[in-house]
Length: 634
Image (cartoon, rainbow, N blue to C red; front, side, top):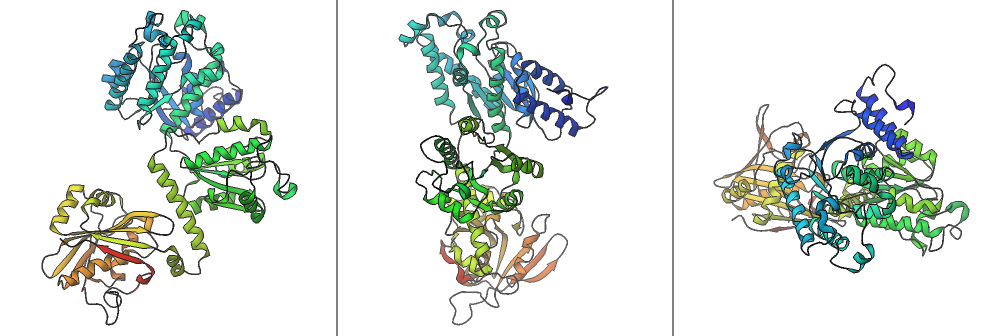
């Protein structure tokens, strides 16, 4: 850590922003040149900082342990700073686990945001490691399960369980290698059981110390002398690796994940410059250096399968680059694997902003990968929220780049992650289609929209309730209902749901209309809403059309509805008057409307087109959709 990172002589930084700059800069210097002494220095400076620092996310870490972990904390602190996290550590009493699992508040109030459970194997089993009983592995797993269950029940924290590393002091190794009942073999059985038990837990993660120690080298990772003297198992030089491994998990748990990797082409997706070297001399394939670039493409393809979006931002000839991607037999990725691309000679910063808009994601969801130090510096300066990763100029360094690339870690891939990614890909394809359409009607027609409007679909009650709770922009009344409320409304009225599909994806249920009163000569629309995912298609008119059709068929002479203004639903203010409803009453709290559900015009198959529901703001015509209706009013 250089002198420039120290607090100014005679005092500390004068503002939260200065503290943030100091801590981030010092952590970056430390990552480039690891030093345990400098990590301790940074840890001490960080303790002088305000509780909250501008630009850093606060995180409280609770550590339960049966070893001396205090030397680890500075390295963890520095590694977390590099992830944009300022950590406070609450370390539990030595060898105490169950008490904190039963009463997490004893480790701090409120309880920590994340717990690290470390179990030193030798301390965990004591002398039994020399002659272990056959059930010791099961006993250890049961104990860890119970501790984790207690913490999950008593807190909302993420629980990080460090699996069992090898013993700092090895013994009888050759004999143990041949004996399935030896402690080293049972330790591996414990680790397998922990992974099997926790891999699906939404708030539990494994810190694979067994792997981390093996990668570093067990002969260098441990300090047997300090273990015997102070129950401190790890060598000082190993601690930065331990800190980074924990920070990787903590960052994924605490910080919203990035969604998109934006990559250059030349000297990134392949070696060489396509426009100068030509396709025949560009490096990509199974021989070095081409196999290094192919390995990077394999890595990106794996990210795509795990729910990340991929995009290209390259100064190149678009036709040549896309043709090479499509036709080269050695290419792993093809044009269809990329959600969007900007391959041109424009400024890459402007391209990046356009890509974010096209994919409907924030710049803070993007990782920018480029081999040019100039381009990387430009993006860092223009868009500090973008995570910039400079691609190595030496192909031999690509595997190391892949293993250390930030922002691509996920603890697990959920079905919702994949659905969300596919929805974003489909939306980007729609945007491209819209840009090429001559007018809005042609665009909507090209989507080939299919609508299913159902009455009294009780299987949809949870989704209907969810929409009433979450829909704000296109929601006439913003009344919030529980599933039980929706069931009651079905019993006393009619609940309509509208599902939507187009040529790119299935949206599911996007619209809801609730008629609270269908008795007598008038119907009362209690709620009417449309999910923001379906804006701009004009489909809301089809849902209203169905309500008016049913009201007419039931003999109603009037359909009433109201608009209750909120801070967010201004866009729905003109919906009712735009579909033929007349204003009958007005106040600051509510606008009330009424329409007659008249018969369809003679000679038409589409009820209520014209005087019954037409007017300004109607939008695209009903002939643009394929509509089917299901269910009865009962």
